[in-house]
Length: 343
Image 1 (tube, rainbow, N blue to C red):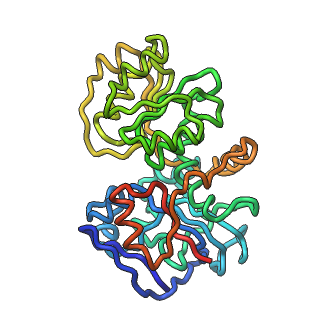
Image 2: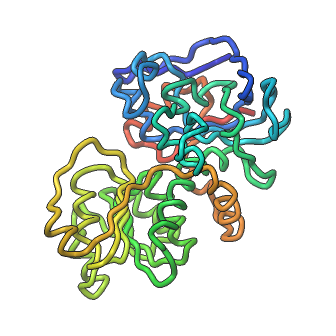
Image 3: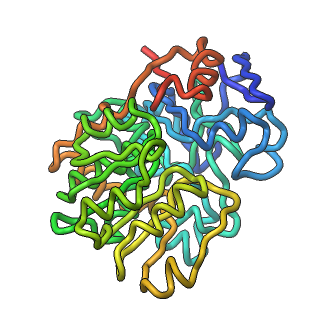
């Protein structure tokens, strides 16, 4: 089968591999769509942000946002059948600890990450634990299913946690694919949304997704602009999807007293001022990272009831044979959400 491999140093290979065989508790899925995520670029650069030894080899198949059709099931699998349409939940846990019991498999001490610790969806077939094969309704495309598993799912979970609603103003800082999803989800919750980025093209997309106001932080002091838009109060909720120190500090500074901030953009280090930015404002600060297994049906209902156009987040589609072009273009920010598709 044709598969992508990222050896590091911006190299992209499309290679032939044997089709995987599902273990007793696994299913084999024929891939129909697999999306590129910004965290995949850590493999592309050769510095994986998650994963263990397998990710470090540069030989693992990437792609943790994937959907397809089950074509084979393991001997011990129940509840999933050949022909089922599924999307993959990226975190495979031990299945026995307190966090796995709660559905938060990504918090399991022994968790493994699809597309980092074991082969992901950027291939013609992939295997996944049966409990991680999320049912995908017929009315949702495979492309939508792939995007739902990370961008929409992560934003739904963190925004539900923060109580985003129609009486809240939400600032979204950083309008890459995850930030765009944040805008879409916040508008579906009914919030007023202020979108912040340094690229006019991304601000324009945010407006098309429902953002009420936009700020180009390259030309304007974003905190001052948000203050002016909110009568000097600041926003009830700020969501940083940029993962950079400037964006993270903008989120903390733009949040109103007794407001809330979510850090969603991956970041290894930053510098903040806890006393001024958090303690004396009585801020609630949370990390937004993926969603528990039990949220999936809620996410599906939310998308259907709010009539969310998930595919509006997708800017480009590629064949797996064009993987090098896809990753290079994504790296140069010439695409937003890019998805590999199979006929």
